[in-house]
Length: 455
Ligand code: SAH
Ligand code: SF4
Ligand code: F3S
Image (cartoon, rainbow, N blue to C red; front, top):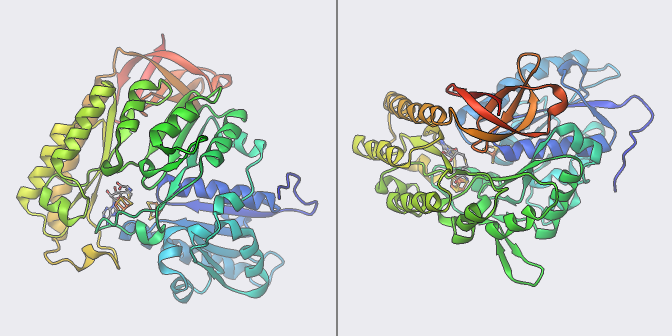
């Protein structure tokens, strides 16, 4: 059921705050689209909202705690509005909703609904019921395919997003790394079917999107059935999407080393529209730590993948994630992390202090590392990663490359585009050029962005 005209009475307004990974960003967009089609108008002003949804992340303790500090502030607003003709409805969605469920309402009574990621197709219904019948909690793993049951975004909704878009192709995780909550908050690995993905990609491109980033907690575990009944892997899916007329760029994130198969590596060699960028987290460089993390690969196997992908696509930028201070990590283990970073030579890499997550095996392990040790190791790791990132950016100076212009820059007359390697590039250009792919020469490099002039 799709409704494009909002109802005639003044629309209720919804504000969605989003934390966490790109999958949450994608989900927030789909929830906003669905609510809009149900009569809500989006707002960015909390005081103007009838419905506030916090789309949350549970990955580290700090991320999860942010929800409660936010809820405290929103509660005050709800109390002010109680009894008025515009009561405020508050919802928690995302991975904290899934992990904590009903507990959220026990801890913060102002919350009216708690909805886990696998139940978003029922959101408009649940909101309506929360408004009439009181608090609602929906955290079942529905057998229904939520994306199949969510309203498709209208062309206007896609156009409002801009020239780049996310598209979730795979959800959940069966890997059970011992530090990670994702298998518990997002459930088992599920791939969306080929036709659903291709149809959605076509609609995005028809509405003006030039670059699509395929998303999954383990995006390279995606598998599907081809038109002739054969098994397809992510490399094959990228080939299928590259055929869509008008698509300029494809990316995918996040990959697991174990699922880095030959079809995907070859796709980097064979497809021009597939950008030379690979986010391939390794987490640690010591084999004993990798084993305790249940990563199911060694440091040498990781480096071998990096070598093979660089052979296939010599200019590829490698990005990753690292955790320091996993239980039992010794100074020698940490040295091995520095070593794998030196050998990989990252264009960019995220790094985190290990955060103990309730319910994961890591939280029960002996030899938890002291906070000061974690901080000190993180600082050393980040100094090295920062050096590598600056060197990568400096290496771009003087190169002539194509950038996709995405949005206005900070100053009038400037636009920000993305390089093939995902760096932000600032260039002089007028607003009418957003969406254009332009050839530029990189003139200067900073730690986080590049400057360029028309080539
Ligand atoms: N599926 C991806 C990562 C998902 S979570 C993968 O397998 O690599 C994103 C990143 O958060 C992880 O790569 C990891 O570096 C970090 N992370 C996950 N759990 C963490 C924890 N308990 N403490 C610190 N960092 C964590
Ligand atoms: Fe978490 Fe590991 Fe799954 Fe990535 S592969 S989501 S780190 S359990
Ligand atoms: Fe966070 Fe959930 Fe993504 S825990 S990182 S929002 S999958």
